[in-house]
Image (tube, rainbow, N blue to C red; front, side):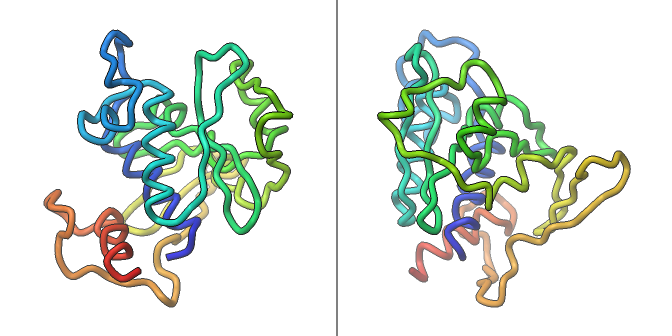
Length: 196
């Protein structure tokens, strides 16, 4: 798996298997443990969980705080370039059959235009200038069937496809490695860790 495919798998796992905390009174909502083990969290819990999981598969990630210190997301380094990814934002904008990539691998300028809460000390954090991996963030109506993603770009009703998990070096799991009852992308992540 490429680093982008690993990042996508972790992002999708968190989006599909967790929910944004409706109440911020539980301290575990602000921890990686709360998101990974209790399946719920606030933005800081998501950024910590995403960072932990990315670092475990060899992808550099740091947590970033907005200037008001009331919201967090990540800066992820892929192929030597830095990108903003906010899993909690995508959790809030996803449904079971449609994963949001609105805040996935964005440049500084794209993120600043997304929402007024995205303000940060630009001198303190890496600059994110590349738009190489922004393509999923501009798609809408993203949904998947197996390993194929279907999405729209600008023209309502015109579907494109993107098969992101079957490169030539793709490893097909032959059993349910993560014990969720189905063989899917999450088994691929588990398998890639075992192969690594």
